[in-house]
Every structure is written in structure tokens, then in C-alpha cells.
Image (cartoon, rainbow, N blue to C red; front, side, top):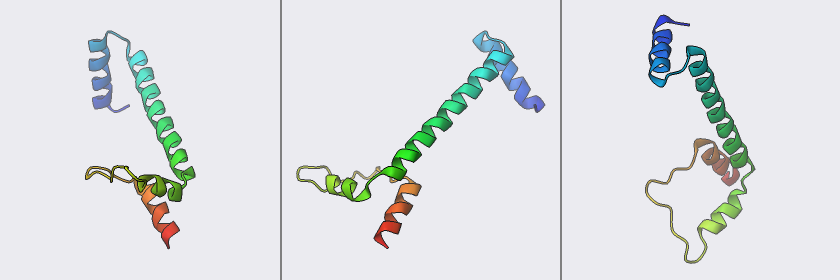
Length: 84
């Protein structure tokens, strides 16, 4: 492990009152959780029925997309492929 990373681990482990091993284990668990969440939502996006989504978006009394709404890149790519 690079020295600057080890120093950071030691600093924050001490601040949190835990061992370096426990700090690293928690950090790895957090990273794994984030990666699993990303996989989960990517899987859902891949199974999304784009046509049904667009129908729901256009329903009467529905709100139009807001300026800060963003379509994830993978979903945008799938939408373009379906339109082609």
C-alpha cells in the first residue's frame, strides 16, 4: 500500500477510534455496496421498457421533464438504438 494512503488510513482510523484493519474492512464494504447498487440499477435500466416509460411521461396531467433531469448515458444509448 502506498505510504500516503497508509498514512490517511491511520489518521482516519485513529480519529474514528478503530484499528486500521477495521477501517479498511469498512471502506471495502462501503465500496462493494456502492458497486452492487450500481449493478442493480444498471440491470433495472437494461430491462426498462422505454416505450412504456415514454407513454407514462406523456400522460395527461403529468409533469414534463425538469431542466435538471438527466437520462443516464447507457439508457440514452438504448433509446437512440430503439429509435434507429
